[in-house]
Image (spheres, rainbow, N blue to C red):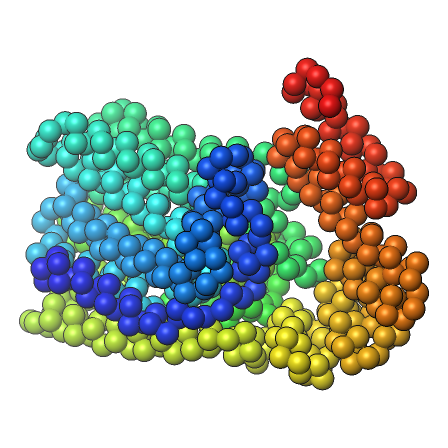
Length: 588
């Protein structure tokens, strides 16, 4: 198949699969990261001062793209979806390029599938494009962080491979190879500054070198690999002085539950053995997809389900080694691709599915980058197996995979229908996770905004039945009660929320409004002032952490004016003034 035909078909498939996603509303963490994020509303924060970088240094590049979207179209969701789909299609083309380049490497010479490399590359990229498990990384706007990191990750690897091929063949001018190598490094840095999953890129480069270029002159190869290996330091350096647990830093969701935030490293690892098997099942059979899984937490390796999962994953790793050894001893060189795909899958999952406890144990968008290895392995395996089973093995394999691509395209289109509105999305989640509090709490505000207060109350009450110590639904229930005119019941709910979380800004503000409505003017003003004081105080802490000491002092002083009894604020003002003095050598 000619390259231009493959490229065109991949793009068309992507557009068809996501043609109904351009008006999907902002949902879930989109509200904190995009619609309610003042930092992205001014490009000057990213180009003229350090606010954009300080806001989230680990994901600066991703948030810069959100700021560009806002600059071009405000909060018109269509523009964000167009960019997300464009990133997804570019990723698919990079997957295509990765397969094509791999068949050109020294260790792939003599592979029986080499003459079919174009068609293998096409089906690998096509499956990556239309598989419904990708919808969360493409349709869910904020998960551009995952797809964009994958773009820079894949681009860096492809550029590096192209550089190495030029070195091996000694064809073309030497400077071209160095330019490609430099671009590979730049892309690696961009990946590291988009999302933490890029941390595994240097390891993948080393594994690729060993599998497809052989051992050879290791001294020279190590020399070339060192700069890429050094880029791995960018992520831990970006995490310094954040004052948060690593799991919270890596978390994709700002709304936490008490149970999930208390997982130990051991519990998280045991649970992830099961989660990874679930991921593999979703790749083979994408049914029961869910934005917010209610997943069982496991605590022991001797739990039968954990033990079986562990043995399965261990067997998968052993299979990768066996296939590599078989290829080395005279088996078809394409076995190397299957081996590499398995190792890619396991390594790229390791950041989010190992020993670092993250708030939520499972999210489908975490499969986006790892799925590249899965599709490389599966497509190669299908062609190898069909070659051995039939005289016309390649056409039969292509026909089989074409049917799968068409089916997956329809399934992705259908999955995107669920994302069309907040109600359809969260009703789907509630139907699949009925015993989890968060989906009920997130469905409630959708009904609330439509004026369906009774339905909203029903969802909030269910959330509290499942988790009485969950502060958000208490506040939300208070809002619904207030709209029904039940002020006393609303005040009671706000007070419960504040007992659970004394720093809950919205609950303080809502309690103040309710108290004013009930005629308690002094108490109401005090609560509203408290809400604003906490907001200013939190902003001051952020500015202090980012190194904007004058802004921090201003925010702390605003908080102190609103609540003079905040003794902690006086201490922070003194700290900020001391830091400013050390920085400038002059007092404010």
